[in-house]
Image (cartoon, rainbow, N blue to C red; front, side):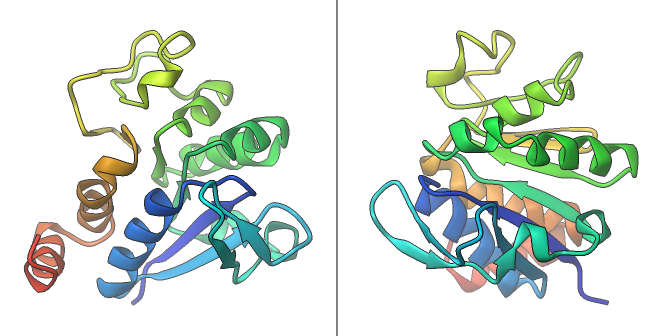
Amino acid sequence: MSKRVLCLLADGFEEIETVTPVDLLRRAGAEVVMASLSESLHVTGRSGIVMHADTTLAAIPDPTGFDLLFIPGGPAVKVLREDLRPATLARAFIQNQKPVAAICAAPLVLHDAGLLEAKRYTAHHSTYAELTSAQADVAVLTDGLITTSRGAGTALPFGLELITLLYDSTASAQVAQAIMA
């Protein structure tokens, strides 16, 4: 059975942090639904690349029905934090024993949701004033149901870690070998 991933998109998302994990997860056989937080399906990334979301978050009847919540970073994190749905969704996923993944500045959303207390996590250095316990020397870190990563430069190992979480290390190794990672 295919695993289902919900990826949240808002204007200002970091393209590499979004496209790389989404691509890798789809190569592994996951159904990744990219959901726009706004009413528009066209979402513009921080570098001006326009992505066409699959749907809007509002149009998904039960967002907690997915197997993994994926929150990309970038300047969009400001929008994600102001819109309370991402933090609420992250709490619901954890309460339902489902994993949540955040990269770059997106762990701030998990912080707002109260999910990082007593957890090991990493994040982009621009967040360290607020995320005072971030592990600066770790590219990708999974602690229980929460997986975090530092930024665009760690998107590939982050995506492979998400495959391991949803499937197993064999599936991750197969995708890595296919793309010569």
